[in-house]
Length: 259
Image 1: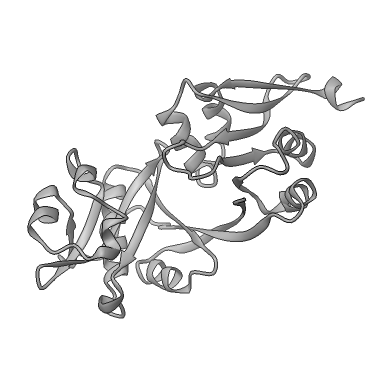
Image 2: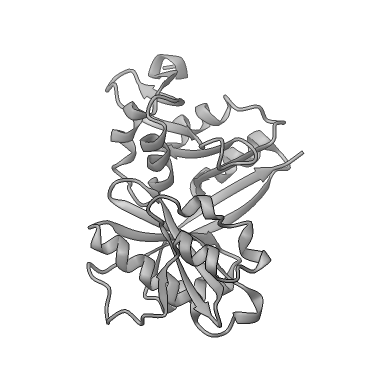
């Protein structure tokens, strides 16, 4: 049986894809977030003609988040993953997250594209252990406007980001915001911690771990699972999230080309 006899390839609305992605809520957290934020946008899928089920999806990242077109590949088998990857321009600027088992497909199609690995960490307990240290606090617009914001942080957060309910937490030292983090990606059952950054002169004090703990505490209070996606080469971030009580859950591939 030929490929086109087994599968159909089409664009469907993101809201129609979410039901398939929720079966792997941790790996697909970022793709589900896009589906929730952009439900009427369309993404490519491969559908089994026999079962009518979605076998693979290629969720397009939110444009304002990605400098180059960003994708999340989710697939139940090698064949359907390869079908979707072949729909992409092999010479274009692109970034794509993919299951590690699909790396041969990625390299075979894109050739010299740069690849690396990310780690997904989870806080694998229902409640945050221990009381709040009171070091980390919510970063509000008032704090942002009244405290010193080092130049390294101004590219990560601005006052406009804090006008509504802030998802950022921070640590202050000598009236200076010295460490921040947020939880922005929300799949409905999973919320991902990101933007963890400590200003260089304040590092080595455990501030990043304290910010991660408070972010996880808030996510748990919302009855969601906290996860943290980070580059496998980022040793400092790995140490901070492990110190905060997170454990390694999965490795995923990341490929990027910028012309």
